[in-house]
Image 1 (cartoon, rainbow, N blue to C red):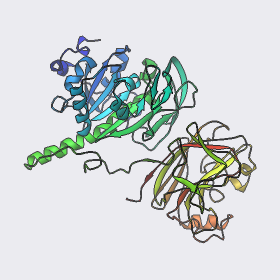
Image 2: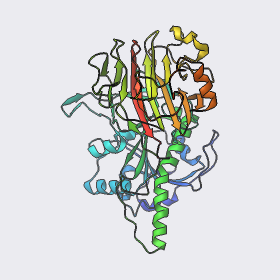
Image 3: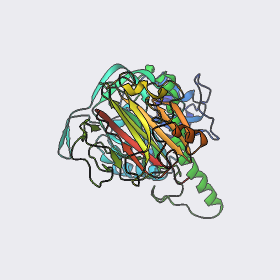
Amino acid sequence: MNITRRLSAFLLLPTILSAAFTVAIAQPQTPKFKTRVLVITGGHGFEEAPFFKLFEENPNITFQATTHTNVQALHNLESAKDFDVLVMYDFNQSISEEAKADFLGLLRAGKGLVILHHAIAAYPKWPEYWKIVGAHYYLEKTTVDGVEKARTQWKHDGHYKVHIADPAHPVTQGVSDFDIHDETYKGYDVYPDCHPLLTTDSPENNSVFAWANTYENSRIVYIQCGHDHFAYENPNYQRILQQAIQWTGKQSRAREQAAQGAHKNGTALTYQSRKDSHFVSQVPEWKSLFDGKTTAGWHSFHKTTFPERGWVAEDGWLHCLGQHGGDIVSDELFDQFDVLWEWKIARGGNSGLKYFVLDSRKSAIGHEYQMLDDERNPDGKLADGKRLTASFYDVLKPMVKTSVREPGEINHSRVLVRGNHVEHWLNGVKVLEYEAGSDAVKEAVAQSKFKDMPGFGERAKGHILLQDHNSDVWFRNIRIRDLSGG
């Protein structure tokens, strides 16, 4: 590895190669500008040549590199002005109060941040960094808010299946579920406001292990993968990393262009907080419908209270016990939206997520995304496929063969409603789409059990409903973004 990788001063940074040539995997759309990246390493050994090759062979960036012993001098706006994104791959360092203030200034300025693998613990004793990365990795046994936390576990040479939690997100777009050989981490806490990108069923790894986060004006992505060449050379990991850099860097580039325009006009541009800045992307933010700990945000249909029995929040899951507790609905109403959730079901089980559920109806009727043990529940063999998992229950069957997982295994589902266009997704695959209120849907409704229900099949502003069909079923990571604003 060229000695310039091991810089002792920021002035040497421009001597580092900034390369751009095509990697041999499917590429995301070429951006208008190359994203300018600063790669920060140090504090932890790694395979340097294959790691830096990730950046040398990324056609959409220029990059420079430094070690964390020098980077704190770069944490101010003037030194970092030539970078759109900081990629952190360093570990377990202290940080001065001055450097903390400068680092936070970068985030207020909208600099992108991609945090890889062990950099989840880059500043393990700085609580604000936990908020920035969106998680708390425990290097040692400790107590947090009166709760004893064990040391986070790690294990080399793990092999596990990676599931795409949100196939529509710019970071994971175009990537399907894949296998990876990599180090595993288990026992760190992910903050509930983070948006899951990658999950796994591996018992040796945290379930959610890659996510998107925001802090001040910055977009942030954490990706746990990346221990050695087995991960670096995985084409799916390469694409996710490329897209993470591109997505996080857009904020910085947009703000810089706005600042340049303001300078030409003789006006000053100040960095505002994320909530107030008009430079923040207008893409609707994701909101959690289940905090992983309580039943807040839900109530029984036609009531104001939560069921006294039949549902419980435990171990990060909203668990329907199959004890006739009744359906539950969201406190909020939604018209156009994008909702994601994870679920698993008991052997032979039956449940569903309904949308467009109206209080004006006598019963909890809505468009149902069916959730079923297709092989063992009798409904899986009825209605010509219109009751299979991911169907529009009893109305429209999936357009493709579904990939529902075995009972007890985790599925990832999505319902997208934009205008009258509706999509059902299962485990990263779009399996059904239809136009609410269309002649085709009206005809299908007329052949269903809902034929006498006025307005059924049309889009309506209503609740999200989780069904109690007297089966054990578990829900978690239920997240929604309101698309009614356009």
